[in-house]
Length: 289
Image 1 (cartoon, rainbow, N blue to C red):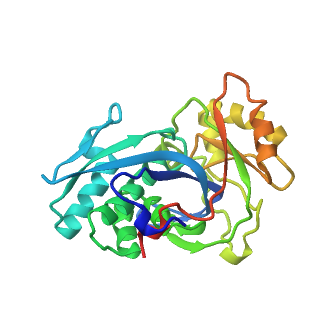
Image 2: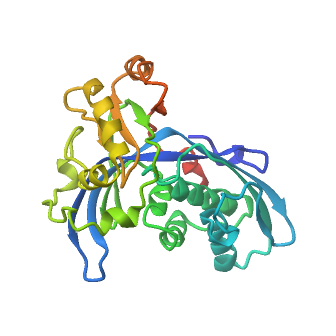
């Protein structure tokens, strides 16, 4: 863990990707939200954020996402939440170097928002606890609290009820199909299974389960199925290739860097992907108590 004192205004703040090693839909609440069980796994690949202090209270994105109004951007919304929750009069220029695709199921936007909460809580010297940051994050999206929780975790509820889980050291090959999958389109699909039996967190084992959202995404977005079919023959027994989140990205797990990179070397020029190790914890864990 990088100590808190090492992070300052000159630092580059990571926003790592997450994978869902399994994702079951176990039911639905009366308000329409789906009840889930999943295993969240951080990987050492993601976006990078930098911050510059402003004394005028303004929040500015140096690289706005195309088609996303700045005030709708999760990074700006996260920073605004911190200002409102604490009365902070400082501002910031926020520079986001994007590596994670939108609509990929890797949690890119949520991870960026969590990194903003981690970093500006520290840089603005606000002193909010991890639990308070998680509560703020939940108002931005169900995945944001995971990144602030900072541990690989068994998730329940709508994904916000988290228990830390020890996972084996491993490498992942992650492929990015050339399509954005809207989460709402998957969860509202009539063919989505919503009755997978729940398990106890203690009963989870590597290789367990499946992703209930995967058949729906494959049916509606053929590019996801094509990518899965390419990766599946390379996957190892007990570690099947799967889709993460609501898609579109797919992944396979390997015990070593050499095995993962050997698979990546076979990737056709028409496909996009990368290899990265799993993380024991979020790189910014030290920034919240």
